[in-house]
Length: 117
Length: 117
Image (cartoon, rainbow over all chains, first blue to last red; front, side):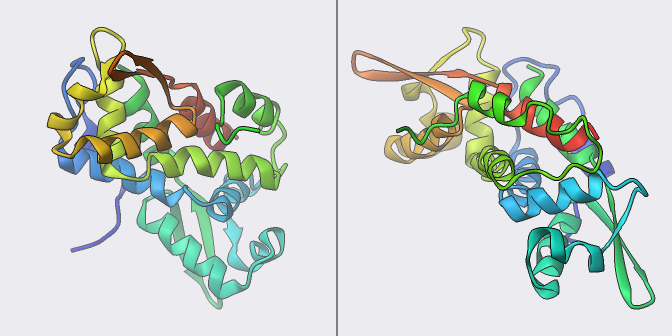
């Protein structure tokens, strides 16, 4: 059992949820959408995500994320864990450092689920 | 002075923010995006928003929102205030009841700001 919301899981859960106008979301669907939005409901996490998404190399080392947001590495790692758990970034450990790649699908799917009605 | 984030304000603040890859968000931009996402970072508010967005008449009375989410009217009104403050719904008082219309622009703009990189 995992606590992560992988993009595929979110996409599966949302499949068809909004093609039927007036069809209310299930508790599970609402919970999954809220989880994605909640992960981005903090200015520091928005900044961290935007830095990773805008990285020219397609990934960023945690060692390069602390300075732009002005936070300690443990605090950045905490915020990053919430983004990873929501499926919004992918974490890869390489030697001493963790590297993060953006995974925009859950956000795209969540926004579309609420605006494509 | 108002605490509301009108869609125009958000759009202005975000204008051009993501056409330049690698350009970090300002504190103000990150705060405005986080505010929109935070408003939807709760399953009940996701449900309330989706009900209003899916309404065939384009609006919903607060009196019709309590039963689908199983919450008291004061609790629903509290959640609705957070959605109104984030610019995601428009509130109109008519006689005894408040009516709510969806305003998806802030969510669309916020999601685009983070995924169009």
